[in-house]
Image (cartoon, rainbow, N blue to C red; front, side, top):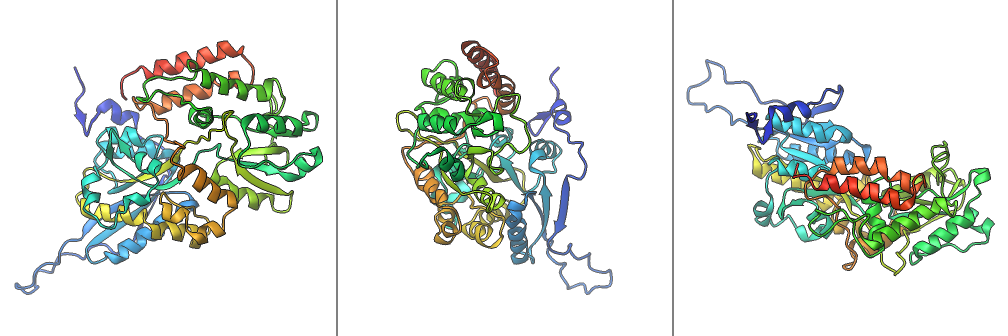
Length: 456
């Protein structure tokens, strides 16, 4: 007998997504609670005060996103006569399960954030309010200001359910260069137009394993990180419908995997499995010559390194045929499908993802980053305070029409299963623990088995 479902979930689903952690939420009421009822001896002609809308918003816990709480407070103050807004801080790592549990119990926030890893799954359960019609009626939505990859990442099956509040071009988007190590090896610094073979040769020349110095630390710990490399090789890890996994069936994917494996098995240019976990073996400590990172990591690396060694940053290398690849990674704000106040929720959504909010986060907050809007990333003041590689990433990745970067979400939305399998099986290839062809086949078969399952 099929279990009765509530909001698209069975009783088993509710138990599965129940969250037992403590200390998850910090709540703050931005405006006082509604006034009490009129006293019994109030004049009969006096109408009771209009009841305020009781609303809530879930904000990202990281200090990077402090602006969300600041702008939620500003919005609450501007609507103090009509809205009581509860602002809650939620840990990103626990949000995926928590939002599902709260949706199933009917206690979802009016405005919710989601990471791209679980956003489509939540949308598929009917959790979010469709936005296309509501935003088309708003002159201030300015959807053309969002990067194409960010806007597409807010959709499921062609319907818009979220707007990006942050975006970056993936984890392997930038390479930090230790100029002191290059000088000692007699090497010229790379440019944005270098290719993967040049990267490998330079990393090999910089390596001195006996002294725990390595040319690079590059190792895609996720299938979507490998996707950036696959796209640089002119291919994709999935077919256009996202139903076929092509890591072990497409020749260009296999070529990219072979190149990556050679960094350790042939060139000794990157840490082996035995020394990969050595503390202090990373770019900022000066023990890795070419540190692969996301654009989000550049500012922090510069600060950490300080005067430790001379440094510079270039884009991740092109593929062997001069193709550039990346994978957009972003997080969205969405309105709850069952919010009692959809117009107000949409208004708050637009305010928290606005140019104003993005510029304040980037310029005033101190720890913030640009949001999903072109006007923020391209703002002259934002670019002036950033390393030049950020502007180059903007122009050569996000704004380059011939460079595609959508997040590779499988059609059946089984991201967690696919990623867990990749993390458990792919290192055996890249560290050389298995014969290459055998390892490729194991990853391919096990990942395809997951993608063959029905939509979650």
